[in-house]
Image 1 (cartoon, rainbow over the protein chains, first blue to last red):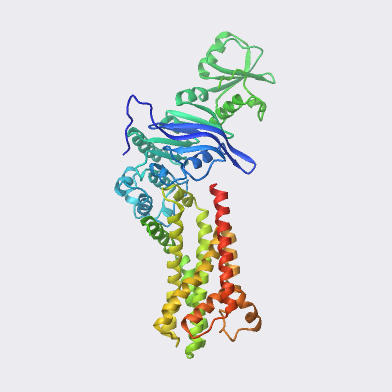
Image 2: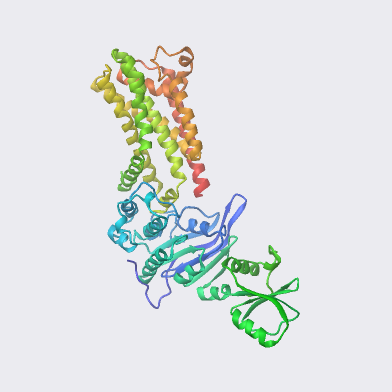
Length: 318
Length: 246
């Protein structure tokens, strides 16, 4: 389906963003962003709504131009149709032509590429064979989503862009799509995907890029990002704290102490064993949103947080 | 013509014909107007029926282009499918050409019942040469209304485009003198008609299928309208590109 990677050689860069700034009127959607995606990588782009993910994707697929900086696909401009011959894109959630039949949508996309996958193979891979004659407007949300993701693979791309591929889908359909994405990667394909779900990025990607307020805040292996994000917040009222294991960061406000930890169970056991007096202990997982906030505030400590609970955490190492 | 243009045309036509209301807008209305306004009154007067048929053909050309492009383009712009299509490896050429060809197909579809009703149910007559000339005149007459539709479609959101198309088409038809014979229109229609694009288009159609000698002012104004609407359509297209795709 795609070319394999030559072992021993550094992977070819298939998508490159250099010092890109993108303004919309007075707002800056992207601020001096650098990103390089190598052949065969699966990169997860994480960020809250309005972070700049969609703008970055739109620049890469040729829907927008950068205000400054350069964007390249396979060494050429994404604005050139020839550069886009090697990529595949998904329409947004409900973005199919409602009156076209499923098979027609596949044919329409296929005719833009020199050597597309046969229609039957596309439909089979995504479990759409029985729906070929149905108009897309009459499909369920999950079926529409499967077709939308399928369309990205029709032209035998080397690089696919998947924008929120499984948002709002049930678990079963989600795994059908994940398997298709994994197969593509196993054959040497490159994927750049955005998601609200950390588990989706964990399941598919080796590398995660965290973006917020138009800046890349973290760009690391998924394991490294998870270590940062997969923490619990333990809150308690106490005069002092003994040395505790697995602490990421500690902060104090209004007599309450907040501890961010990678292992809240072990931390609580150690706290109890130490015999230190404390009360009102609560523990809860940090949400992805908190993790973003955590990374954001760590990246720009001058920005005041919204509420005392979200105050910048001392010793946070983003 | 490239295969991609054909592909885009084919799928545009498919999308259009699968929504029967879109067909009704451009095919039923001119046909119904023929049945209500021409067949009962001009059926026994060949000359009057021929003029009236040419007027209704102009009406059909105007409505199918005004609504087809005005509402069609603005509705498409609202769909993510339109953005998605732009990520496929094709320039804007095939998409635009496909849209124009689809518009032509729809215009022909709206003209066929008008011509058929005229031939079968009225005494309207013309020669083979007249029919050929009339086809040519219809193509020329379609240009300003295509541009008007594109200006509306690229310049406005869907609801506004629909309202503006609806507000425009009746006064354009009535004040342009499409609802009356060239000489028997009310005085104020006679006064304003030559300055409207509908009249210039109708003059062309009348001249093609009868021995009518066209009003030079109306023809000149048709040229002026075409140039002005082309500028407006280009401006609207550029503004839209700038807003959505810069």
